[in-house]
Amino acid sequence: MANSLNFSQSKYAIVGGGLMGRLLAVALARSGAQVELFDKGGADGEHAAARIAAAMLAPLAESAITEDSVVRMGLHSLPRWKELISELSDSVYFQQDGTLILWHRQDASEAERFAAHLEKNCRSNSDLSAPQKLNSDALRDLEPGVADRFTQGMYLPNEGQLDNRQLLNALASELKLLKVNCHWHTEVDPQELRQQSNYKAVIDCRGTGAKESWSSGDKPNTLRGVRGEVVRLYAPEVKLRRPTRLIHPRYPIYIAPKENDIYVVGATEIESDDLSEMSVRSAMELLSAVYTVHSGFAEARILEMATQCRPTLKNNLPEIRVKKEKGLVDLIMINGLYRHGFMIAPAVLDCALQLLAEGSSKTALELGLSMTQNDNQVEAICA
Ligand SMILES: Cc1cc2nc3c(=O)[nH]c(=O)nc-3n(C[C@H](O)[C@H](O)[C@H](O)COP(=O)(O)OP(=O)(O)OC[C@H]3O[C@@H](n4cnc5c(N)ncnc54)[C@H](O)[C@@H]3O)c2cc1C
Image 1 (cartoon, protein in one colour):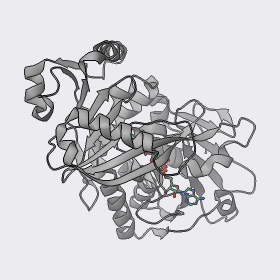
Image 2 (tube, rainbow, N blue to C red):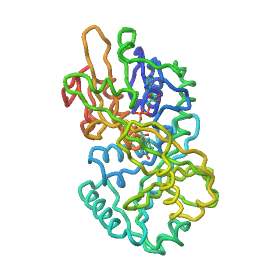
Image 3 (cartoon, helix red, strand yellow):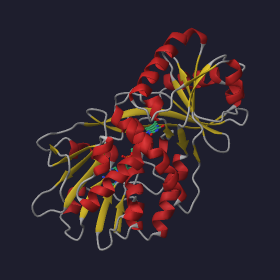
């Protein structure tokens, strides 16, 4: 998509170089634009939700808790991730071998409910691949490492994951190669940059850092943080091949296996902007739940316990908001990626690029991504 658009002669400022800001900066620079990127943290992304995420790309699993528009964005994004990653100079681990769902015997009725929910979603969206029930032989074939503890499971085909930290690093290297002016460790207010008329537009990708901007205007939309806690483990004795989710009434967890025996384990969703360290309760729950999936986690080494907040709008859906004001350059605000940021980022990127190039986005209409201009919902935004 980015290759077909031409942005030469245009200069953009992007504030926030986490997931969305970096993807957009690379795409715009590749299409001929002059780009300046500002982030309050460094190239490691230490303030970005993107650095802590598990980066699972799971439209069917997520369909249990989100709207059809987000699922469609997720389906659009899977093949786009392959393209975007193949265009980068540095390699990024990407896998599309499905998701495994497990549950302990006593939680079978919870699993039944989950399966029924996914099957219903597949009937209303034919692009989703139906979940497959696994008996003990099928489970052993698919994921031998858990077959001694579980006698059944469910397989969600086509779902994927990537290595978020490799991606952030690869995008930072690409920005260097493209000679994008990256102002790391520079906290800025997009409103102030708008006074500088040499930009065609200022693009606000600050994630939770943009809270005040979203709560102003005629139709304020509350932007909040939803706290998540993850443990990164080094577990050479565990051989899980794909992202695995454990259905559990109290401790539902996910385990995302990355390269080199690294596992990202997470669970929690807490309605809070609290960025303090992980609580003892969360650590105990995560670690004991992960041990019930595979005994090899007993000897795993804890590399990191981390917390971050997912940028979330009132309706838990992403939005692109355009502000046009006399005497100021346009402000494009992209936010609300919530717990699906990686899953939907390529779709949001494609819509944003269309909007910047053409003044409207057909793809946003097709996928159901909300776009507003000066607080009004618009079907096609005119530049
Ligand atoms: C624990 C956890 C697990 C997750 N797991 C998944 C998953 O499995 N799959 C999935 O799809 N998504 C997942 N996500 C969600 C995903 O990480 C986010 O949706 C995504 O990172 C949001 O991207 P963003 O670019 O909007 O914000 P961020 O990635 O947070 O980036 C925002 C950037 O803005 C910068 N910034 C803020 N204020 C300023 C300022 N004033 N000036 C300059 N820079 C500023 C910050 O430093 C940061 O780098 C998870 C998130 C968390 C926290």
